[in-house]
Image (cartoon, rainbow, N blue to C red):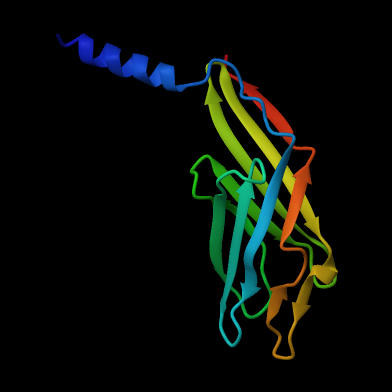
Length: 154
């Protein structure tokens, strides 16, 4: 009897893992629902919804950061799905910024990582007369050319 429980646990864990890497989508569709600093405050907000197809349920990626008006870089923040992280990278005043998303999933022989990136123009951000920055670019965009990396276990 003592052998049955561990064997059942092992089989259920193995069954949950993919045998082969999953086919990554060609594109993902992103909606920017909040990307701004709070007027007269010290908090900036980031909320992105990522979809594998236009009608699919969104993966929500959101975070807050402390800043004095300018939206700061934010590396490797977890999304609602613990297998996904996002980053927002500022290049400096008057320079572009980027949004990156990475999903990680296990499969029988290793780990699969799917990554996509979008570059924002410096014109996509405005700063009001009080020095508070907000995103004014397109609310929706498509990330094409996703890359897939497979890490094979020995």
